[in-house]
Amino acid sequence: MIENTIPWDRHYPEGISYRLDTPSQNSLVDLMEKSFADYASLPALDCLETSISYRELDQRSRDFAAYLQQYLGLAAGTRIAIQLPTLLQYPIAMLGALRAGMIVVNVAPQCTSDELKQLLVDSGAEAIVILANFAHQLEAILPETSIRHIVVTQLGDQLRTWQKWIVNATVKYGKKLIPAYRLPTAVPFGRALRRGSWQFFQSVPVKADTIAFLNYTDGTTGVNIATVLTHADVVAGIEQFSSRFPLGLKSARALENMSMPPTNAYAQAFNCLMVMKFGGRNVLVPKPGDTASLIRLLKAYNPKTGTEPAF
Picture 1: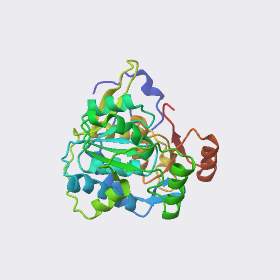
Picture 2: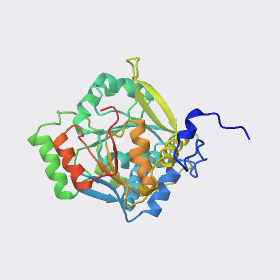
Picture 3: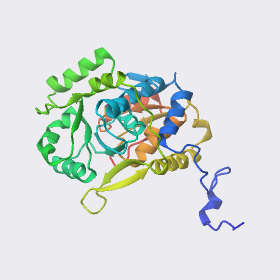
Picture 4: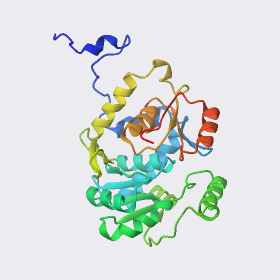
């Protein structure tokens, strides 16, 4: 056996190997569907005082997958752009697209019209899920892209009924945070889920080397460039995180995590996915810059972990 010559290995805590074991799941779909089965009754996501269980996340993401696959007729490998802050709609749309064998193109909420156009043109995305607050930017550049299908959502669309109307009315009419736009073919997110629930979802075999995400970053170039992540890449990242994670937190009862913007690759692997592997609960923070609200959430949930990458 070749002796390990990595100098920092001797500083690893006891029980931590410097080699990563081969992941037991081939794809993110395998990993998530196991969590849906193992933790069905446990809370998966909390956002703005609304909680949904793993069973509900399973059903809603399956409905969205069926909408893309059966209602829209999109094939596996189609690129689906998602421009959302940290809302319940993001993991539902993201997991639904992955379950349908499609590629998620993450678009940062703060993208300008020019940046959005560059991302959509470069990725070749054919569909987009977008917050209504940003829809006017999409309208301005839509003819220059390959987008054929648009799903628009408002901030409160996946909240409980009374919360939904209050939050959406406050954002649109009270604070006037939704500029006027005209996208005649756009479908509301809730309607897309209902249409998907009427369809039969056909499971798609997703291999380890299937592309899962196109994550864009400008790095030091000033131009957004796509980082291509396969299912195997992200699963390996999850395994890496989890192998270093304290054993005492690998429990559905112990692991609560504050999830910040999910369009960053680190936040995806840790917040949205690794926490779900252990049946933990992600507390979604739509506006982490609101310090007072963030402090109230921290006091209410007392989370064990949390990340806010690059913000």
